[in-house]
Length: 386
Image 1: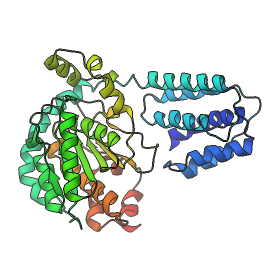
Image 2: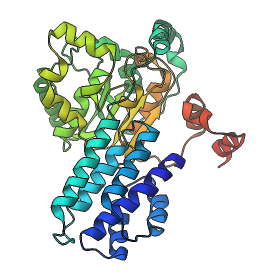
Image 3: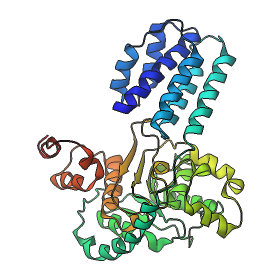
Image 4: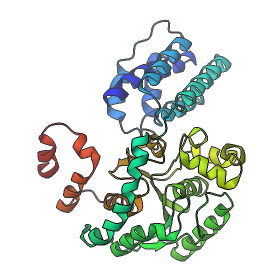
């Protein structure tokens, strides 16, 4: 929250000033802005920041530029889309009078354009990460030996899960994930479309398959997509939230694909014989939207094919959006025990509302980067004795 605190201190002052410019009093503006953060994971902290906001004769352009400057200093971040969406909601608030609507609209549009510009500057995976992708061979081979030792938490109900393979992969790519989920009691389904070429023509068939599973079980279906499979999963979740229980992506570029810097894009364009951004503008635009279902995005900072920041959704937009970092390569995520555990835990938490962690789940925490990023010995005591 430390870096976010700086961003939100600047942003909330800007947002409150916009509300005041639209006819609200300072007190009213603070209440409206606070309410807009209701589903924000940092709601309590941001509420305190909003209470401390003081306004004099503020210039909206200056406040906007200050916030943009801070965002640029911290670098590209998908969470900035939360700021844009909050501003747009404030602008549309029916409680406001029609004061300087055009001016405010232009300021918000300029803010959005600047945020988009900042977020186009995500660098490609470094050469070191690309070379590390060779470890995927060891990850796949070793999985045959360690699979039986991966902890398993049985699901209470046979929930349907549709899995989608990565770019240039097929259903064999998701064999271990499906096998693991089956052993927990989930009813898993293949995508049955051969090799995934990330072609929009596959969407109608996938939607038809979703309909079949939905009708068979008479309940929503969870979607799990690895890499390019996650692209399809997100678009389907956007189009049919009434049939999708939740979305789980594994090393998938869930936003910013149009400007994404990766060798994967070049190989895709080579195989198709056309520029990706020229052929699938509608496809890419849909990918930018955030589905109205629970979302878990699994990523690795040592990904050698996809920039890891493109694999994270806006966690600050809603409290049911989670980004989970794991260790490993991109090509080895289909044979990564930590990925299996994360997928299973996400399905369990979102479907069965498990409140407390078992001792096995606490031990599993040791295998995630997030645990080792915490400082001090207290992380061990907090994990096992809190």
